[in-house]
Image (cartoon, rainbow, N blue to C red; front, side):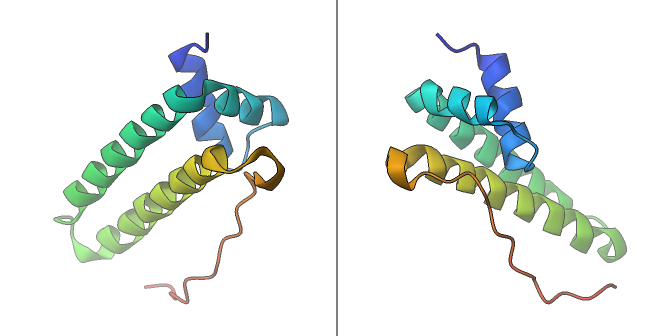
Length: 102
């Protein structure tokens, strides 16, 4: 059985692009437990995103963008877990947002 703490650590590492093949294998082995944990992390991060909407604009935009990127990364990990073994990829291509500084 996969320990939840280990699984969550592996999810964050993979979502941040720092996970190893062992981390990826642990997440896949976690199956439905991984997906339930990913769902919880996505919902928690979305709630955190909602809470930053009231920050002053000079910091809000960057903080919101960071939370949005985190949600996208977690969703990508969830999609990789759901994908058939031969089509599974944890590597995420990040598209430029076109947002400039300020």
